[in-house]
Length: 263
Image (cartoon, rainbow, N blue to C red; front, side):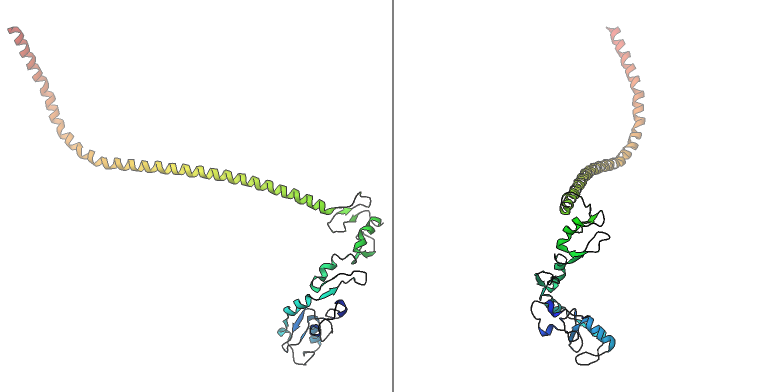
């Protein structure tokens, strides 16, 4: 089996520099040897499995010294090619790099009937019509591979795109609801945090005022202690005055009585 691309695949003959010297096809995954010759990766590996020399110059080659030529690979990928199903009627041409993408949607690509027991292979474009009349199985799979099982008598066409769109819309609604609930909780936490910060600030002010008051009381305590001995020294004198005060008042009363008798 050739390791390169078939020449008939291309819309116009490729340049000779794009050809592999082993398979004579267009280079597929090109690699360069130390001697500068370029081959398909698959072709040169098969060649080196039999002999350890370059197919062109016969110089000795080591597999570890092979280098991928990515720039050349991209250049070949831009060459225009025909569809794989050109003989079946497909007239589409596309770059080589996009060939597989076209085959996945080509209406002329042969596909096996998904119904169990049916061995028919039909083009993708006629698969839906075949499924409507297929006698194998009571259920059919969606031709677009959405995973749905369809009954043979199911009314109306199966529109899986609408079903997927509806499911996606419901999921989006649930996501929006969850986001709104989350925002409400965040706002509530924010308000609670602000309240706690305000209360902590009030408590800090209270503690600061209390500390100032306590400091002032501690400063007044030594002065009160200094005044206490002086008050204790004055106490005996006050007691003597108190004892002397009644005697003087008695003398005053006696003199007052004498004055009245004289009169």
